[in-house]
Amino acid sequence: MWVALCPAADVPDDDVLEVVRDGHVYCAYRIGGREYVTDGICTHAVARLAEGFVMDDFIECPLHNGRFHIPSGRAIDPPACDPLRTYPVRIEGGALQIELPG
Ligand code: FES
Image 1 (tube, rainbow, N blue to C red):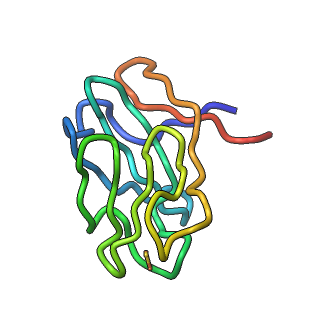
Image 2: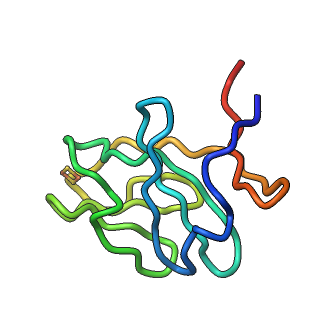
């Protein structure tokens, strides 16, 4: 099921936008001209990743500096070791959409 997350124009180039939808926190990115969406809460502890730093295609957590690869969600640097969930993304009618199960 595809759901609209935000206007595609709101997603910043080479940076991150936090979007809360139905109580779930997401991060939306445009990296090198391509959009990505991951979960917005760090898998190590409760930190909002959108308050961290985007460098190339990595995001660094603001709390303990764990790092994730945005396209794959892979945890790159400790203390983060569990991957971030990533979502299939498309743009329809100017909206950034993600695919959710069901
Ligand atoms: Fe993100 Fe610890 S909360 S690395």
